[in-house]
Image (cartoon, rainbow, N blue to C red):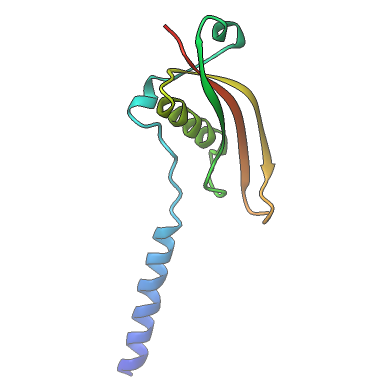
Length: 113
């Protein structure tokens, strides 16, 4: 009887830990990336090009894949020393596994005054 109780308790605790590991969180911009703005092609002409940005959401089960990819791009722009992102292209595709979606973003990082 005690062995069955221990196994049941172990299964319940293991399931809880597994479910907690699957909790979906939204990727947030870092502190410095919060100052990065999305700009138009016209605005970019007045700024200094810093580098290219190509990214996608990491979590296939995210309810906000576009936001996750954009926040990842904003973080990358900040890492490059830029303060502005011009989005060149975006698209969303179903993940190869069929579970969830992947949002791709290609852009350019700029330093604007």
